[in-house]
Amino acid sequence: MSATFETAPATHPGPQAAAELADASRRLYRRGWLEGTSGNLSVRTSPDRILITASGRDKGELTPADTVAVDAASGLPVRDDGPRPSAETSIHLAVYRRFPRCAAVVHAHSPYATALASREAGRGRSTVRFDDFELIKGLGRTDGRLVVPVLTNWPEVPRIAADAEDWFAGDPRHAGPVLLIAYHGATAWGTDLRQARNHLECLEELSRLTLLLDR
Image (cartoon, rainbow, N blue to C red; front, side, top):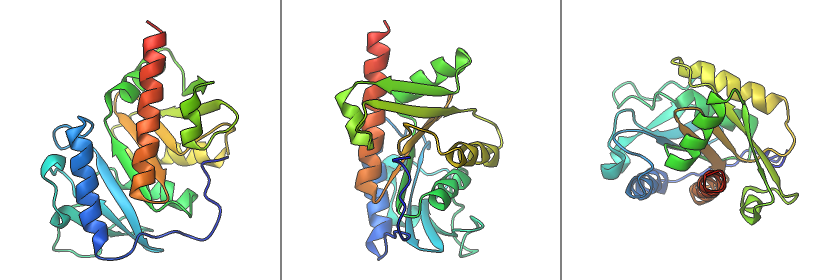
């Protein structure tokens, strides 16, 4: 499974982590992928700690103060007097647990990926398959095929995280560092924020092309 980073846990340490999260959030907001207060981003700052965007924050105006350090095992904030972490922290933790070399996770409501996931779920499908597009290489696949899970958008976010863990545990063939949630959004990860964002961009463009071809 190419999405599995197999070596020692990667981290994104240092005081710049919060600033980079804020900058990446504002960039994605400007693209129309984090409307309202939607979406969330995180980095792994140490083997046992994650820095994630706070709940209910406008991503277009996010500052370093709008991030929260959480325990990587429990998802609980390290401090009691700060903002609440994203409601989708459990999904981030599921990714970090599975992929030790992952040091950044981005969850956004990019329109084409969300539309494609929702259409496929409406047709009773639990995955989206992409074939032959050159851009598939951008998601670590060199065989011309990418299969992405379409998870159910349960009201209870930990249930979505559990479904993601079940998908990972199956070690699916042709998988990449991305997943979809029907009627919700897309999640991508990588060794740093730049790579995670790049993976999200690749998934969004593949989704756009697929929808165009299906017209």
